[in-house]
Image (cartoon, rainbow, N blue to C red):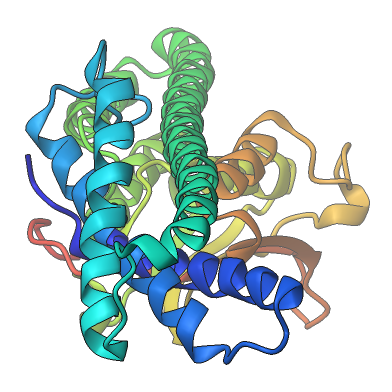
Length: 355
């Protein structure tokens, strides 16, 4: 069994603190005695007992939830360790002060010392037993929360894909009757997009460059449908290409910008997707020159895709990430969606074709 030396050091310090407390209580009943004597005896006995119990339990088969021996060893180990630890600690302290705790004259104090050590040993043993058990359940709770978060993210991603696919197939059905060649080109783009989406869905994160590549495939798909009404700008600095981010995070924002911003506008417009480093954060913005929030049916940003983006960011990064949807006040007008992710969580990753 691998030994956690940091935990051992923590247990040693807790044992010393407990021993000093016990010796302080002893001093309260015998204030005329020097504190150094009960403190030394208490620490020597306590540390000896701790060494025997904390290291001795590794020789037994232990319960996973407590790290404590099972069966008869659960009782014998602390009892034997307390008795042997008392003897060893007393001998060490006797040598320090030149006392003879085992002499006939010292026997009245000896029995009191034995009882104190026994009670203190049982209390300390139960404390560490409860501490290990509590730590185990805390670890299990964190693991359960982690699994629940991963399952939730997978569910959100599986919801987003059919949503996008439904919209595209509905448009493809209309286009087949109106312009078969364009419908064929749109179908080819859809196949390319779905292929890249399948590759990305196998990973919990991928390079920002890969996310922009998928956006390029999707926007090419939309360009077949909208023609010259759709203008695209993808801006990704070279130093951010290798940073990683959750897959399928920008696509619903782009889809929302086209569906609710550019398509309702007769002249169409421009969509810009940019990545920037802002301090310790990765800033991702999707801006369109469409009809704007005031003209959209839902100005609260609660449409399906936007809501999923909010939930994914909350599940992945909590308060460390943010999502903002706002109107653009310049001459071009439109709407801007902004995501900010902590750069500490967007670690460099290999892969991606570049953009």
